[in-house]
Length: 191
Length: 143
Image 1 (cartoon, chains in turn cyan, brown):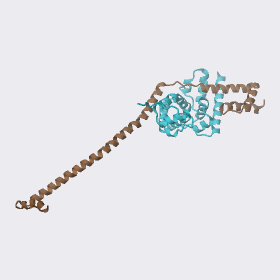
Image 2 (cartoon, rainbow over the protein chains, first blue to last red; image 1 turned 120 degrees about the vertical axis):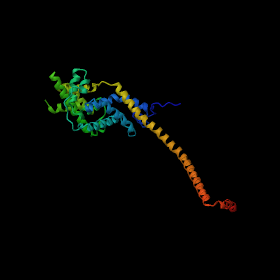
Image 3 (cartoon, chains in turn brown, blue; image 1 turned 180 degrees about the horizontal axis):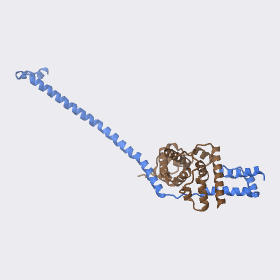
Image 4 (cartoon, helix red, strand yellow; image 1 turned 90 degrees about the vertical axis):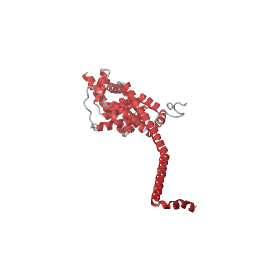
């Protein structure tokens, strides 16, 4: 009896195309593999985007459910993580709006909560200074920095994900980097 | 201090990490930074910040991943179960149609029989006993 297995890449098929094909078939093994492989990055993206950890599990779960519901929309022509993050972004922002928080674009930098996920992730003094600086940064800058330097997405990919033109994305990264540098330096000078 | 050169150098330091710069700009930047302590320190700070961002790691929760996997798997299985129930419902409907038709026909036949019986009874009662032989002989005559 043939056993249903994870789709194996067909000749000439890219990894993204393999994922797109598996998602269209609602392949359970593939979905398990994707959750296993991308869950940490998804959680990290959501924390960088919102600086909150308490709703992250709900958002991550809803994101994967939407990935399945909209599987037909992913054509495998772009990187899977970019598509995944764009869904996660909508999930988190919709939920924050429902919870009466301000949207990312209108909220200012909020004072850092001592329980900030950044601070609790800091392993040393230098990381703690960066955590404080990150927590104080506008979410749109934090998001752009994560996508560029952690996820290594191109400016075009980030622009598509956040719905902004490439020069705006470049400007967000530049400003975010400069603000972080200044705050990080100030912290170092104080120490 | 030539301000515009330092400004250019700092712009290129950032740009090299954001979108990349042309080889000739990179060459110029390297030669400038080699001779400018201030811009070299600026570059070190930018490199430090980028390295810091890249090294940020959150505690991973394996149980969260498992919970999400279970929830997503349930979501996939749900439509499959729904499909089976739908198929079963369609089968029942298809099987029920001839059954209902048979019941309907049986009821109609029973009703017809009752009606005929009733008619016969009424006729029987209406005909005087003395005329009974005439009625019984009628079908024979019609033949």
